[in-house]
Image (cartoon, rainbow over all chains, first blue to last red; front, side):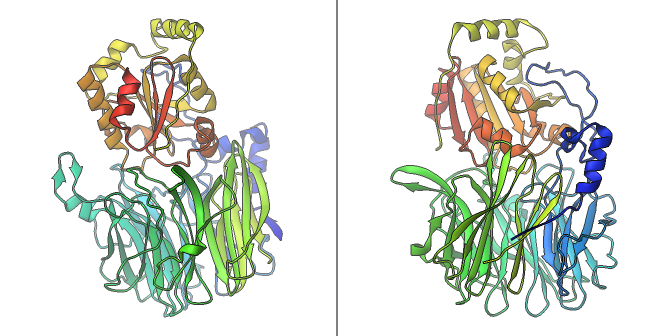
Length: 422
Length: 173
């Protein structure tokens, strides 16, 4: 079941040895950041100058299979530079050398649910997207690089959305639909910014989901159009194709008055928003925990999400799984919590009756990669522990090509690739 | 929502707190705290935050204190600082109001300080984020703002989102 690809491990190990041991590994993942770093809890408010230390590693990665079956990965290297690398279909541990891409000096978000992503189109097109945090806090632009030669060369980065305000455009997701149209979907605050204020607060609830389309693999884009008002502001957006080949999106929404459940919509003009979850979680906070979505063989969907719901008078936090109907409405009898109270950032994929749910489970410094596998369309699951590491690591990412499913898990020492066998 | 209380009481800690408050450079004085709640924040440094620091803060103070755990992209977080700042100003209470940034360090954390109204101290996570979060509260699932209110006796209240009026009253009692 498990295959590991040591991508950055070798040079990291060399670096660590050179610096005096593996214990130094995480501290030296990235170049030094210029910053005024004071003392610890006992440090003076005025602070004493200390040599700048290396920031935390930014391990958030995007993965996808290319049409030829190679597995591609994109992320930031130790210097914060965007890179891509790939491994052949027949040997997913035989990664080629990482190739650094020119991003014109963009700062790139690659932490948690902010991550670079890549997608393959039907005619040799490859696109890589990321959020570029802008100088003003809470702002960002969605940037993209495109290739029309299967990823041999990439363009300079460009901004995907037409709106050029220095406001929030973040947490993008990208995918090609069955007709080869590239869809970019993101969280956008132009409506919130334009809304009148009630006291110090905006009268607008949450943010909004916006999207655009490109019919030429990212060479040009249609207008920014709104999918939904009142999304939550800091969670990833899940995309999955429906049985008709059109993409569906699922995101954390802010239903009235302040309920952070999930919305679902077809990515086409004027599509209604369905409510996909009913946890009834009322909170004025950011969960940083977006959903996962995969097409089921009956035309409905498999979904995973995090939420807090009242059960017998208690707030119960859990990552939950459920089947959705084709219109995004939940089959309430299928809702169940993953068998792990510490589960976080789950992802889901499906092929026929096979369903894979993977997640990270953290206890102190130890993280465990777990999988929940079903052979009967999600009626029953078997739980597996795939790997365990100490220290920093990314959320697990599922990649799928046909019936083949792999989990990619990046740690400070390596990129693990786990082939799922049912 | 998600509120618990515990007590860390004892004369040893009070002595430590008194000693700490008497030592310039170790802690911000109450006078300085009071001034911060009437003037714009002038945070120029970022202190490391890890499990050992948290243990020490709970044990040794300062008290009362509010620790607001936040991220650079948490847009619901500044409202909590507004609430806490207004509470301190209205009640004329003195307390540490600390921002703990979980996803950035150094300058990247510092540029957000002016969004945290009334903040008296800025910390940044130094280490594996879930491990530190687990040490703060094993049940906390990285929802922000996550607020820990530490009262004069060392009792804590833990809140996701803005604390309620009753929780604020208990904190400053």
